Length: 512
Image (tube, rainbow, N blue to C red):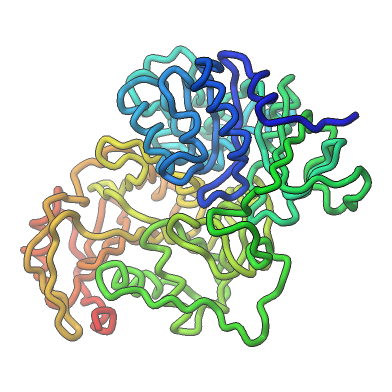
């Protein structure tokens, strides 16, 4: 059976009200934008398909027109369930205007729920999300008023063996859109040249198991039986249509780099990436956070300020002593930051994000370095809703609730902060207008209470001070040299922290 089809023909078959699963990530990783664009063209021309439900685990798009932005038209979508929204400001705007039902869930829970649905199981049952915005006692993932009024909940609280768990409910998918490097007319698909495998198999399995269809966009078409069995990651039995896109890009960086797909080793004469971060609060925080690493540890570096930590560790010659992973399924290598977060050059392994999230859920991370938007008196952290914008956590919840130790990294405040740097000192000239250490966070992405229950070691590192999660609150344990603990720290917070009996000074070398 020949499963080749044109992208516009695929778009023409999508019915109003359909549920579509997207498996992609920021930076254009595994992004089937050729198919997405065909669906968008049809809607702009005919007004159909409309009232779609779109589900995606990781952030998708270029922040302008690609990826999830293709679906961000009034009337085109009715509901979006996403793990990360930042790469689609147009979809964020629709959610903010209450024109769609906006739901946010931990990325790992979305990907693993797809896998469970594909296996015919009763949804995903896990501890991940307890005490956070995903917990139905708080918001159940509902991110705007229209979602809160919905009569179709996504999560329920259950008890198993005397322990509380969350059940992410199963669903029916009408279509899954995935991408591969090479495909054949029978629908066999290889990911061999992809920079990440993500949750493509899980999404395809979920659609197939619930009576939906699977469309695979591929950059190269080959004859049947030309692919070796070990090259096939998505067997043809799961694929209904194959769309050939000969100008397919491996990522937003370019058409193809074998170093990103792990198909070549680093040449002996090519040194590891050695970025030199600009001196400032981000570098100070990264330097202090880097002190929490230890040789042989399994670590994760999240998006944002933690992305500067590998550069610090490389300068110190310590990166080679660690095992580094990110939720997109990458192990080791030179990790990209910013809009290409989730990919690497010369990775040692690329696995599916579902396998990676299983590894995380099983306690595979020793130390997780994650961003921090807001911190409150109970030790809760918010990164998923900043101001009025829906951001989403990506893999933040899955990582922060399972790592043995968590180091949150964020600036003390924002907007207008001015420092004067002196050798080995940090002098505050003007505090920021926006407090980030507040009485109560806008949304709980990390639960301080759950961290205490699990016995996690938790630090909160800023350029001005360092705090720890104490048994009954937050404790100030370090202050930068040149900073007044009372005037520059405590009086600039929305709550009064505990203060360590032996309040230490942050190492002066951090400020050189």
